[in-house]
Amino acid sequence: MKKIDKIFDKSKSISLDLYLEKVLYDRNVGYYSKNNPFGIKGDYITAPNISNVFCEMIVIWVINFWENLKKPKNINFIELGPGNGDFCFTLLKTLKNFPEIFNSINIKLYEKSEKLIKIQKKRIISKKVSWIKNLHQIKKGPVIFFGNEFLDALPIKQFKKINNNVYERYATLSKDRVNLIFKKAVKKQISKLQNYELLKHNGIIEYPEYGFRELRTICKKIKKLNGGALFIDYGYKIKKNIDTLQSVKNHKFNSVNKNIGNADITALVNFDLYKKYFSYNGLIVEKIINQSRFLQKMGIIQRVETLSNKMSFKDKSSLYLRLKRLIDPSMMGENFKVIFAKNKNCKFSLAFN
Ligand SMILES: C[S@@+](CC[C@H](N)C(=O)[O-])C[C@H]1O[C@@H](n2cnc3c(N)ncnc32)[C@H](O)[C@@H]1O
Image (cartoon, rainbow, N blue to C red):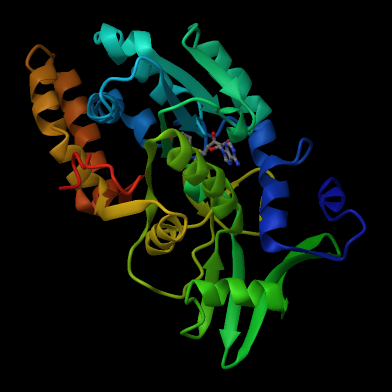
């Protein structure tokens, strides 16, 4: 707990999103600065860790998008938050079978955690791939952004509305214990919530200020350079005011103020809100669909059938179990959603139509 003091520095309290930023990414204390969270030995498993067939479906979607963009000879593909590099590994392997796009694509990995960059650099050895620290470094297009479980990893702000009063959530440290408390929100924050019509109901309101900051550059790049952004994440579409902050350790839920710096903390993605953000910033989102539908539209079942033809019974069972995990509505199929933001004149809508 000693090191946690440093997060608070001299301030008695810090806003929830700043607190989350520190407990996740601070060089000394941050969860992502110390841990490799992925896989059975880690704290959670993501879709690219579950099966490379998931990754293949995204790659096929990217190839189709590139074709729709008229096969540009130079295209930037940016993976946002590449984790342990599993997706990028399959991306490279699959694209090698499609030399025309392989020769045209520049893959850039946008990663915040130095610890994960080291892990990615060990796994991904290719002249096609480079790492970027800032999305403004992308100067040429078209550009395709992809983030799996990227949005949920970005710190959120929380507010509480009780009748006409709005309060913002802060973290405080007292007697070695972190408490999440509410303080009166400032006008500037309240007007941001009003702009997104988030103050219609009482209850907990979540506002992804960090997420919007990342998307601001992404939207600008897409408008200027052409292309689009595909995000897959767990979250909800219907409007609701609920507290979705959650913490995970060793594949189990953990109390948000326990194991600080040693457990992941995320929030569910409010897809409707992100859709609104995109439209306020000049892009369009036609539909938000669930992961099951996206993967099935991309042909995941046929791909698994083909792969399993030559497999032993044991490998076949494992492959089908992984498929089930990805598409079954009671597993990841329904909770995980897919959103694609593009320029207004773009007609590409593979899997979303
Ligand atoms: C939940 S993990 C998902 C990893 C990977 N996409 C996957 O599906 O396995 C979130 C990833 O986003 C990265 N990340 C979070 N915030 C970031 C930011 N602001 N800029 C760049 N990377 C970030 C994390 O370090 C991590 O690699």
